[in-house]
Image (cartoon, rainbow, N blue to C red; front, top):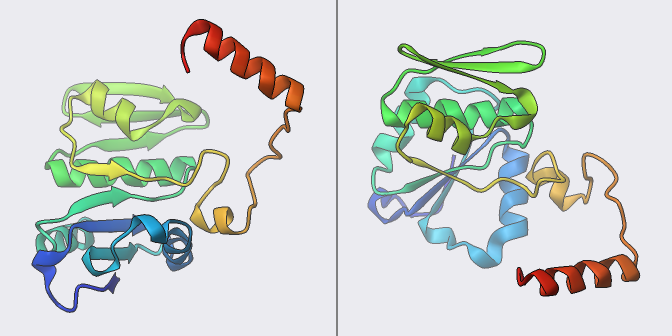
Length: 177
């Protein structure tokens, strides 16, 4: 945990959760102009986390907003779902198969393909209130550390100036810009 509140837990407004300390440092490096260090806490879970770790942190920083900054891969998304379930006081059983993730809350069950899983979808389908905000690395990157190294998961297609101009013309024509 990196806490810059000078011991004043009530002044903390945002607690950011990451899988690693490297991701927390990279997040700060990328977003420092948008963050207020003195009211921020950065938490590295070292991968997975226990219910008591989350409860201890959220009890101590009870005035804060909690942010899911976990990785963009399936385990990172599931960490965010688990954290939301803990903070909402609703037990959700999560089962992963080769291509599907099954979420069970009491008698309710939803099945989502791994590439369709998101915290917002699970929230919506299981009727969960929002306790966790999401600030993930841009979609092209697995995590914040990869953002600082400009290492996307796949090579991004480079559009020509002509393609960009055509796209802009089409958006203007449709009125979506």
